[in-house]
Amino acid sequence: MATLKKNYLIQKRNVLNEIRSNNMTLQELRFFSIYLSKIHKNKPEETRVVRFPIADFRSIMDLGRIDIGYMKSVTNSLLCKVVNVPDERGGYTGFQLFKECTVSNDDNGEWYIEIDAHDKALPLMFEFKNKYFSYQLWNALRLRSSNQFRMYEILKQYETAGGRILSVENLRSLLGIRKDEYPRFGDFKTYVLNVCRKALAEHTDIKFTYEPHGKKGKGGKVLSLKFIIEKNKDYTDQMTLDMFIEHNNQNIHDALDTDDEDKTPYQERIEFFMEACNDEFTFDEVAVLQDKMRNTISKAQYLDQIYCFHYINNRYKYMELQNKQRKISKRFGYMKSLMDKEI
Image (cartoon, rainbow, N blue to C red):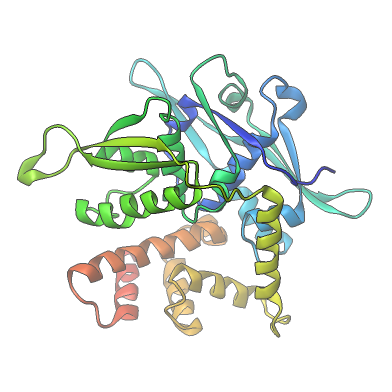
């Protein structure tokens, strides 16, 4: 079984890049790019099924201690990723990116994960007659959020043109940012645009500046942005995939090298959700939030730990935005109230 021990070229159809991020996490975006780097555009049937050693997959997805149950929630989340490809008449066709995933062990007892693309997604991944762009995988490995990752791809596509004009609404959609996230342009500028600009300049082969473009809306609202894209000649510290995996494996090892070998699945689940709140709340407090969530979402959603993580994290982000407008003193109480309203 081949290991991921070198840097790969990612080739991506423009149409696939123009589709919004489908609420992919950073880890899922990273995994998808690594998948694209492993397939061969001229050999769809031979390379569409990609196998990863489980240790590499664990590192790519930033997973700590895992069992089959948790692995199912991670891979099921990947299998649920849907793209909606627009047509010329204003409609669209929707389908999943991946159709099948296998987690098993080989004859040598080595665990692996194997994933296969959906038949309808094959043209998006393998047919490259025109309108596509490419980049080296190292550009994506040090980016630390899905916003940074998607911003890189959105601008990299137009690197040769030297610039790109996007409406703020379209950019938010491409980044996968909900309407209730950063509703004020000032927050969007501070926490998305400027953070992405700094990250790309530090970690990738392009850098950018931006400015308002065209007419403004009511009250001087910025409606469109013009991006100026340049080659980043200052960045030379390229991280290969084996370096990335080795680094992440060490981080995972350090995190697990504690006296918590006897943790129950329940304890691990609550601690996972504590991360969704930036570890601000105690174990018992997050357990309360989980119980409230149980009364709000469906059973299938509740059993999906990745879905639950995002459910809690989205409400925590909303609280942070509200806190900028008016200081929230009883933050845990406010989080509970957000879920009580939905109940």
